[in-house]
Length: 260
Image (cartoon, rainbow, N blue to C red; front, top):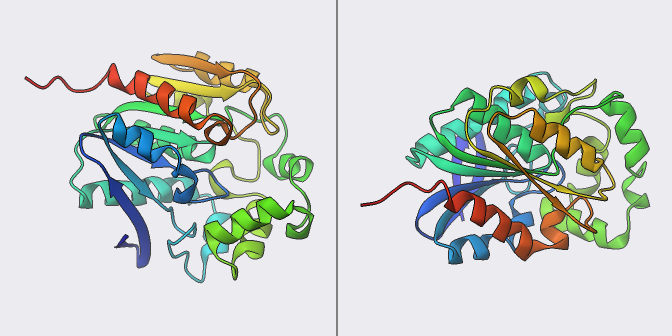
């Protein structure tokens, strides 16, 4: 367990294994713990894996103004700046990125801002664009209160964010904000500027986004590839963890640096 101070907030990170580096970017509701079934597969495949909790998630501090920050227009750029500070601190020159849902947005934004650092990008279950505001979208897709969640999901929130923050964190992130914001969302302009090879992984029956979103994401890329997972819900990493990791590994291995 390690922490680095980023913008006066403690940021939690862990590094596993040896080899070419993969950075795992969690979704907008959980934290680095969501990767517990994925990390061992990547390490066994010969990768070094960096997992960290973004500001306000999991074990990373949010600060007294986290709700304001979460709903601000600067949330996305701040996520990229924090990631850049962390990788510089760890002296990582080039690496692969795997982002789940909102983590995929962070990955895209970083790849556009620092094209020479990203060897490959994998984005799984990441929204390409919305046809209604994200505030309206969230009202349609999420239970209105923490108490309306299933007991199993409530337990996950407690595990991810602690018993004192679970309910308030859900109340915050289920309304609007974060990487997807509160208005109309459209990642296509950024996708056209992604220079690295990019794999889009998408479920065929996700609760949140239709498979057509994955196709639109793929078609917006200059070096894109697409993998659709059949009979699969939004969290591919939970439904098919081995296939999720193996698909990402097979893609990344094609772009590993040549070592004489």
